[in-house]
Length: 200
Length: 173
Image 1: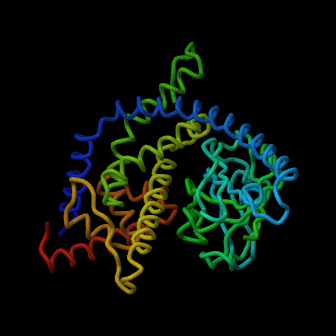
Image 2: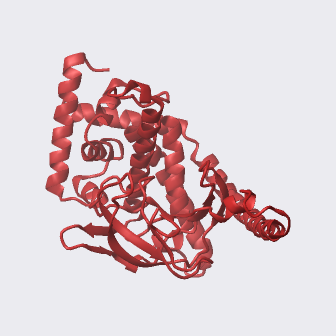
């Protein structure tokens, strides 16, 4: 096979996709998805408020009526780990030789689609999700050895600082959706996950 | 981004994005399909990449080459999708330790040629898809992949050689 054969395969694939893809329709769907996202955000925000209120109520009730040594819903919910999943807009680089993290934009930008998830620690099911507010920033980054995670190589450890209800949301990158090529500086668009506390 | 000076900034930005979307969506579907082998996943990946562009259009529109940013995102999403599917397949195949589980094949544009391309090392298949499907030049690919042009040439040559050898043994699709 020569260069022309490859060109023919590539052109054929592109043409067949272009014939089958309805871009204007997808564009309308994208607009609808944006509106749906805003509606969903409002709904989720309301749900979070109700959820917190419910937790408070359960906690208050448990003090009054639940036996102290009986494991209950309140105990489980209080121990929920918190995840924040963000998508990098800026490149970052891990220099394992010097032990430094560097990148563009001072790590201050990530997309509005970033979200926080509350996860049941027993079932690992996601029980609540809400969007991080725009303006949230990554406040710091340092190299961390991910010895306890499925990813055993070096990576950048980030801290979220302002614009988020939980201060000092300190976490580390886990393997899910994380840079498949540690050390590479092509990370734009990668989704990374933070765990509250950072030492799980 | 040229525009009439009396147009409101927001209107121009939206129009710019619409053009960007209409131009890039089919190409990103093709790129994602070439990398992932799943028509369904390819549309979702392209849509997700363009969604991220939409969410940050005020910033991305100022880039000299927003298309390069979009291609990086699409490629990274395709890589993540492939890793996720591999992990799922491995989890489902725990009883068959030692055997590689092939990715589920979707779509109607399948062929032995692209199967071989997708078996190439990541950089080689990315270079081949960007060059032969998306029509990018060596220089443009080097920007998207953030590697030297000589490296792109090497990836393309090695990828072509490998695919040619593989198809030569079993016959072309």
